[in-house]
Length: 120
Image (tube, rainbow, N blue to C red; front, side):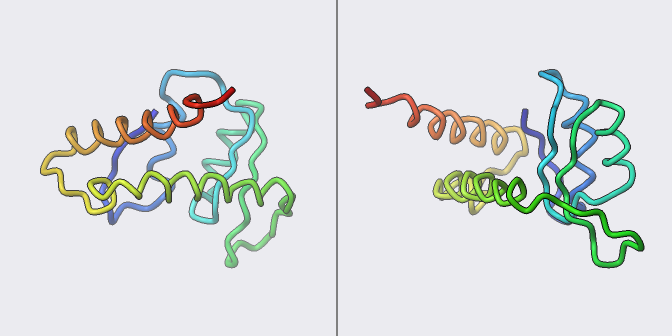
């Protein structure tokens, strides 16, 4: 599932639409410090999912994170980097959010298809 938000909106505001979307129940949430909020941690705990989110520096009680699992977040960042290789995606030429989101889906499908083409 993909949703769009304004560029000036904080990271964790996109959490609720994504967690309410149809799909399998999450088992792990692997995110950066931008998603460190009590609401997100409590929601994931009620769903029985683990949260791998480093705590913000201003949090009174620091919650330890498994560094080995958090290092896997690099794969997510590389995926966004590959998506942004599509110039149209990186520069946001589309005038409407609907057409931009449509191209996000097309770029994601192209990236996903590469995993299947020419594999023997």
